[in-house]
Length: 145
Image 1 (cartoon, rainbow, N blue to C red):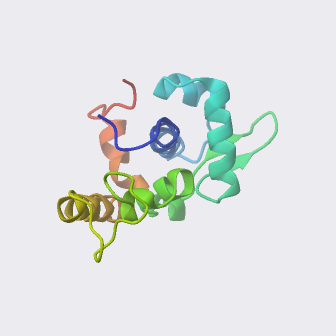
Image 2: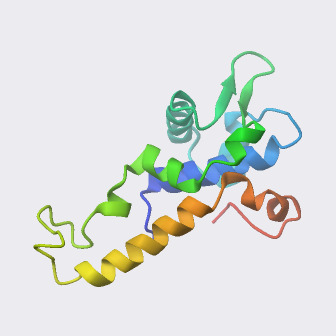
């Protein structure tokens, strides 16, 4: 079961891949990223363009171009990627998708889901993009299904 949209899953995996592959100062192309995270290239290109426009990753055009991340970008929390792609409904929305669910008018899952939602937000807000680079470099983590 996934808690993120497919677009957000690809975005997070791509950002991890870019951070890992560009740690030495190089750039990585869309073909390598798509192969590295097992995603459709065309769909991924749109996602990465959007992340680049929003300043979460950097890109450079031309024959030696590609995507990359600088040191400050590695310190950003994963919650910023989720919010950029899926919005903040994961952190504030109702577990049943009800618009009127609130503290005053709770749905049957409200209190339990609020705790889960808060823990997910805490995890994503305290985990940075660069947290997993060493494990990725050592082959301890994978970005493919």
